[in-house]
Structure formats: C-alpha cells, structure tokens
Amino acid sequence: MYKINETIINLIKGDITKIETDAIVNAANNTLLGGGGVDGAIHRAGGPEILDQCKKIGGCPTGEARITTAGNLPSNYVIHTVGPVYRGGDNREAELLYNAYYNSLKLAKEYNLKTIAFPSISTGVYGYPIDKASDIAIKAVTDFIEEKGSIDKVDFVLFSDNDYEIYEKKLNKLMNE
Ligand code: AR6
Image (cartoon, rainbow, N blue to C red; front, side, top):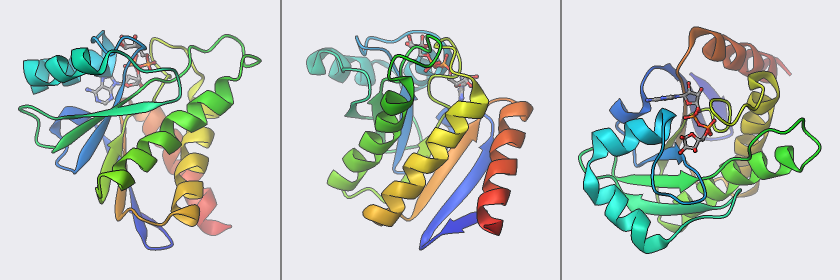
C-alpha cells in the first residue's frame, strides 16, 4: 500500500473483474463493442447489460473515457477508455495513454466515485512497452491526485508477476523521493 497525499495506491496481482470498487476501468477499443484481453474478460463476467449500454454510447475516441454500469461485476461502474496502439512512440502514444488514465479519473470524479481500479492499459494487444506505460500510468494518477485530489483509492491491477514487479519498483522509488 502506498499513499500520495490523501489517496491510497494499491498494487494487486490478478483479475480486475473480481475487484470490489466503485469503478473498474476497461482497456477497450474505439467501437466499445468488446474484444479480447481485459475487455473480453469484463464483458464475459459482467454480462450483456454492459454491452447494451456500450452500443447506445456508440464508440469512444482514443484517450477519452465513457461510463456504464457493471452488470454482474462486484464493482458499481465500468469506465471504458481506449489507449493508443503503440507504433514506435512517435505518434502521440504517450499523450494519448496519459489522457486515457486522466480522463477515466475525471469521469470518476464527475460521478462522485471514490475508488477506482485500473488494468495496464495498452500493454497487451496494443503493444505499449510496460516500462514506458507504467511511468505514464503512475504520472497521470499522481498528477490527478495533486490537481483534483478527489479520489480515496486507486488500485493498479496487474495480470503478470513481471508487470507487478515493475509497478512495485517504480512506486517504491517514488515514495523514497
Ligand atoms: N484483469 C486484469 N488485467 C488483465 C485481464 C484481467 N482479467 N486480462 C488481461 N489483462 P489488453 P490493450 C491484462 O490486450 O493492450 C482488446 O481486444 C493484459 O495481460 O486487454 O489496451 C480490446 O477490445 C495486459 O497486461 O488491452 C482492444 O481491441 C493488460 O490487461 C485491445 O484489446 C492490457 O491488455 C486493447 O488492447
């Protein structure tokens, strides 16, 4: 457990669909109509209620976020965001990935949500190197806390030991600065 100002930052290894929190974040695509990876897992576990709302929303530009309820999941909401496909790093990927995290947090604030769980956006099918992506994820969350301060707890839910250890190292370093 880490703390930035008044916000608790938790690292969790495992499946984000099992997390009890106000909102879990989905690493979706522009259609919001589902896919593989964490997106597939969320729709499978949450049931058709989520997809019905996504169809009505009608898509989401890269870097933005949209919200639905969470169907059968233990969380109350799913915030669907779209990270960039990594194409070498010179195509605004860093800015778009930052926006995906920051805009998810802004949407949580608009809904008065106090706890949120993020997967590692863009680092699966979309190919963003975890080392770079984790820096951006931590920076976006830290900036949001410092600028808006409206969230009680942020979970980073990592699927692999390697991803978990990378986050752990970076957060330990940040806490010692
Ligand atoms: N809980 C937590 N993390 C998970 C889970 C889970 N249940 N399942 C996978 N991960 P990805 P992207 C991790 O590919 O790169 C979809 O088809 C996974 O190991 O899900 O943003 C969408 O529809 C990886 O570390 O998302 C889009 O088309 C991380 O979640 C596209 O994939 C993200 O991997 C989005 O690609």
